[in-house]
Each structure stands twice: as structure tokens, then as C-alpha cells.
Length: 232
Image (tube, rainbow, N blue to C red; front, top):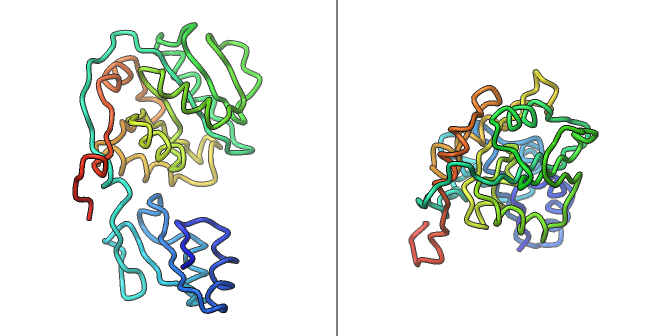
């Protein structure tokens, strides 16, 4: 079997696999709340795979419903912190800065010498307390995220799923096309969905404040599969 979870290389790999008689499956990314991605639409036209969506409201005769990856997790509560330590991650989206999020974190007054920043393309800032990195290794990312009281992240689905796997319910700050922070506003969809599922706190840049971060320090997540829960 050849399976893709919504990655662009599926457009090349799945048709090749199908021609060789391999069972092919394409599960559209959970970030595609209102319809399939370009990759998904291409595969639909090519009839190169069995197609699944994690959002039943746009399922049809071609796109069958599949459980959401978010159903694997549920929120937990813990003792919060009045002055939480922060790990701030802006992802690795090339060509798009996210200075508005950096400024919003600074404006909370909670960034200090304990704060760790992973800035991606938003380099050149000289006003940030704590440790500042452009990129970090996967192991260091997990270490910094796990050590922090609160993780503040852009609302990228890859970053979010990685944090959930660590038991972290992050604060998701939405990149906006109007501020030239992304190619479109799809991060708003994924952030809203994660918030509605209770596995993250979703905010727009202008709504990020100290109280949001303090409240977020009271939450984590757990994987119901490790508890023998039913996620079917």
C-alpha cells in the first residue's frame, strides 16, 4: 500500500504506485477544512488513489470521511503559572516574516531570559531576551518545547501535530495574508478547528496578551490511544 497524508509529492508518487498495481490511499490534510488541496484535486482528476477527508461536511461520492487526527488527543488540566516560561516558534516558512507575532509576545511583558525563540525567516531582531535561533534540530525543538510552561506557535499543522505528540496544548497565532505573513489565510481554519477541539488556544495577533499565556499554562493534552481510548 502507498499512503499520503496530504503531501505534495503524492502527485508524483501515487500515480506511479497505482500503475504498478499498488493500492493507493490519499488522506487530505486536516488543515483543509473546506475542501481538497491542489494536490488532492489533481489526484481526484487522475483517479490515482482512494480519497479521504478528515472533514465529513465536504465528503462526497469521491471523498470518503476519515476520522480527524485531532480525535486522538484530549485536553488535560494542570497547575498554571503566573509568569510562565515561553518557547516561541515561527516555523520554517521561507520568504514570510512574522514580526507581528514577535511584537505581540514582547508586548505581553512575559518574555524574559528564560524565553527561547525559533524565528525561521524572521531573522535580524536585536530586541529579544533569552535564546534566539533561526532553526533548531528536531531534538532541540522537542527539548525546548517540553521545558517551557507555554509554547507560542504559528498555526502550522506540522508544528501543531508535533506539539500535540509531546503532550503540549500550544497557543496558536494565525499568520495573515494581508500582513504578507503567508500565501493565504488557511492557518485561521486550522487554528479555529484545534481550538474547538480543545487541543490548542487560538488567537489573532491583536488578541495575544499575558492573560492568554497564563491561561494556556493551565492546559496540556494526552493521547487517548495510550489510555486504551476509542478513537474510531
